[in-house]
Length: 301
Image (cartoon, one colour):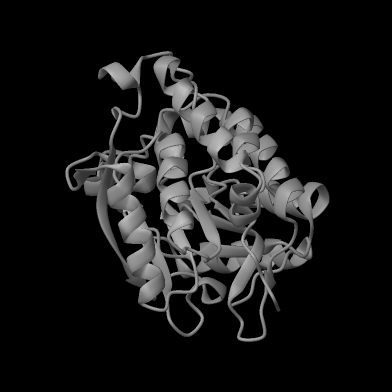
């Protein structure tokens, strides 16, 4: 499969530079995510995500713990960005999402990371929790692309995304990998501190699918383009698995690659909530798999 990432096409015609300028301008009255804080991050003002002008990176390396189409033979080139536009009380990476771990990095610095991961033989550049830094990432991408970056880009996010920002990314992101965390508004507000999550995540995933379609891989099994959805099963049915699977099957595509995840454990502040204070039971996970099968959703193991 002769694959050319979309961002190289946009760089060739000058559109990537235009997108960088549009994104950076929006930081002056930040509306990058659905919180629409309106703060001037270019001048050091801080909104919900607690970030400013420079990116903050917790780590970068070839990663072998991601989904098989991302890892393939040589690993996924992950860049873990610090901070987040969610406040999940059960976050398993809370030291990163709360900004307790990470260093400020310039656009040129992140470009060097991308190029290093390509040199290591990684199959993609996996941008983990990128939402709050979209304009800055585009700035880095332009630098890296000019110096030879040619790997697919993975947008690995929590699903709380602005349609306007996703349209800014059209033709740039090759693989979207959002979470669909909840099907219920009040549950999302209680455990992640966000409003209108079900409507926002459904609209976002529809837009992602419109841009990239079903997941497609090359002859080695490495993903090159498409949508991959993660759904973490929570205790006591709190993640609303049945509605999530219905949505994917009927409003996206039953051929969507869905990772139904079983690794929930009471991390961070979860022990303060009795319903979240124990690990996921085998029965709850099996029930989630059966629901997915009933809706014909593709859940490769």
